[in-house]
Image 1 (cartoon, rainbow, N blue to C red):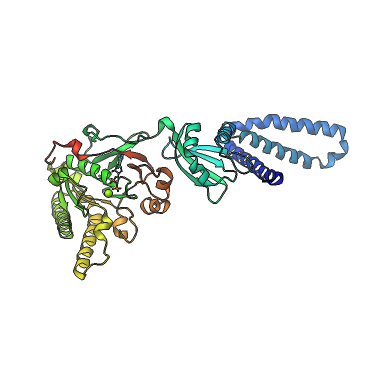
Image 2: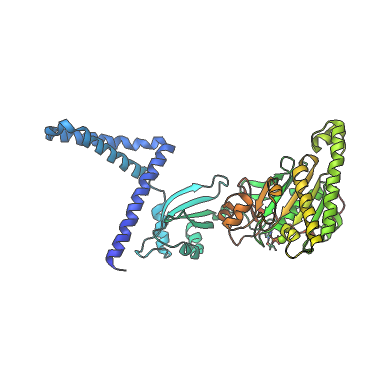
Length: 433
Ligand SMILES: Nc1ncnc2c1ncn2[C@@H]1O[C@H](COP(=O)(O)OP(=O)(O)O)[C@@H](O)[C@H]1O
Ligand SMILES: [Mg+2]
């Protein structure tokens, strides 16, 4: 690269920095108006300059307002430039230079802002002016970046077609743990609250009373089966009757076989769903007879203890894949999907819940009728498209590192590390309720 090219790049970067700082200063002034106090000495200087100018050049008095206005604007911009200085930028720039993360003109990325993720306060969003450094260079140097900044990096992305690079990270010490073992003392004392894992502000829970159905998505190996088992284990412990459709037939061991109804084929799955719908009808009559509108009210009024019923399916797509099926099989499948949709639509008041896990719950896999009723959405590691399918936005792609299993994001934006659950370690307990 010759000197002129380098000069051109330098100039472009400098201009970008100045523009950024002025803009950032404007934004900061809105948020923290007291910082505008900096304008007082600047305006005083303008006043002084104009006054002395007027004294020595009285003939421009007639059009004085024009240069005064110009000087005031200039002064304000300088004020914004001063206010808009991003903290620590030079130190970080130096560190980047040291690890060799520089562009062709030997410029390191320039930190232009640090802000907090709105939902997960520990997560910081570092916005860099990448100075023309490709995103892949950041990704390649992730370990060095983590070391010099003492951070644990979650993800990098380029900001909407700009030169800017957005890095999400947490302080190295404040990161979520990579593994937390479940133990029964973590069980929520509340009747139908499930404890899922460790979030930035403590345990993360899911209340099935207010929002009864759960959809769990994420790539293979994201930890869906482990989390599903964790939830189902708690359901069993809380006295629910649990049906598990598992077409792989591998993942659910003795504890579940002994305490749940396992559905390993279509016939038993259909039978289970029909049982649930019949129970729904029965409960409807019961609730009507005492004027209760939901299971909690019914149980409270009558002193009875109608259990909650859970229908869970791991790898829902595998169950409903209709590939090369015979006509009868397709009809059976159709019935199963319709029954699932009915449970999704009608189960809520009656304490009948769905918990469905599948890699990719797009329209081919999960009908709109079912999906729209899945109030709780949980997504493990995913690319932007998958995250959008599950949560409605790309946040799981942004907030979950690609190599992290058991890390999940709730629909409300809460990030957590799911408890590691292994039924072998909770052995010795059997029987419902
Ligand atoms: N909560 C967790 N904590 C730590 N590691 C986990 C956790 N859940 C899953 N893993 C790791 O990820 C692997 C895959 O988990 P699994 O539940 O089978 O994923 P999926 O069902 O999404 O394909 C597990 O074998 C384990 O090594
Ligand atoms: Mg699985």
